[in-house]
Image 1 (cartoon, rainbow, N blue to C red):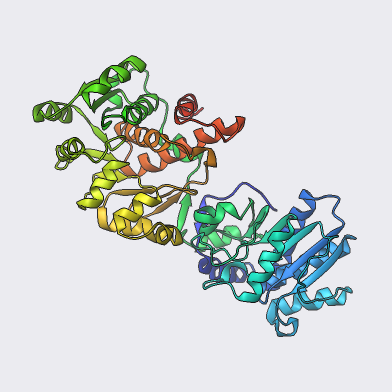
Image 2 (cartoon, helix red, strand yellow):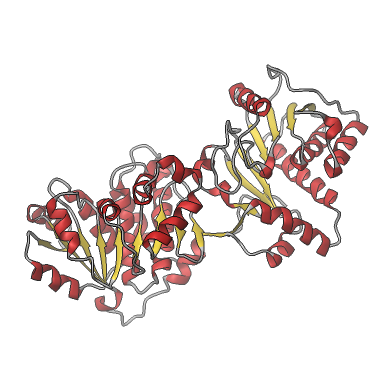
Length: 495
């Protein structure tokens, strides 16, 4: 069976390669049977998506991924589709199950050709079975040229297991990458398909367990877990009928230097909309009227330099959100200073992170929420290095700064020092000002409602991204951070 409903468990490519051998042995299956099933899974997606298909190009590499391609080609030819098969490298050098698949293709009258400079104009769909999950280093020149030719041709591409050129473990580009409209992955979903640059290349993800996924899961520990609605329902049960505001957290949001009142307003309203019992703000005095006028339910206090005013609110609060609109001024640094010794739960975002990068410390009572640029500053590296391996970057951030790390971006990662969590919700409409401020307020509210830091981070990320997806049904361009509020309220009240 092939489905677009992905399992929550994610794995490294090596885990799947080793685990499929164990699972097949447990179920007394030959590996070639799994290859046949993989080819059938891909072919079913091809025919489902393109039921009137007449002409197909299958591009095969030298490993088992190429063997899957040979099976797709044979099934397509038997269905009356005109198939051209290109073999990158020598077909005679194929071994094992891939050689069996090649021979079966030849036995049914199929032909093998070398890739050409130009793709025939009659081709309607391309199947990418070039590299698979085993790619570690850079794409070789001959393969890179073929990938570029396929992408330039512009017809739909279905990728087998992983788009060629993409790292299955990290989601990083290892050279030119096949731009697919759909990717069919097998047995265990590879974690790199769900984060980093993968979103530009995978298209719609399909999964087939090839009949051994249950045995595989019993024998294999996931490398990461995908967040879904069940996590929200578990962490946000119905409230007691006798609940009062003191039961659901007092959250203090600090930030909003001159000219940046909007950021702290967004964070604090997101906090209130996400169910915090009480929400307060400390900000520049000039911001007080604009925030109170827009949202009178939020308690707003202007602050200049009186320590006792902060200590009063700090004693009152259960959770602190600091950073939205904070700035890098002397006022910003003085405000942050008053929170540095607190042992209360904290969410640190935006300029709170930039100031943290200047004076690094390690604390387990906080959640940090960097985007790749902020993560690069926190680690003293480049955005490219962060994006080359987002899993490693999240781990390094946690090791250096403690607590829970939320590494934002396509396929946001959460790492709590023990477990990776990954969010596949979200869309490009979120690339607009204020989205991060809303996220920090959501997470702060959840922490105030007695979720652990790890739970608050992963549930908050899912609510935020899913709200953006609901909002983007009317179009991704023009989505505003404040447009998410009605959807956030829906999502924190699961039915």
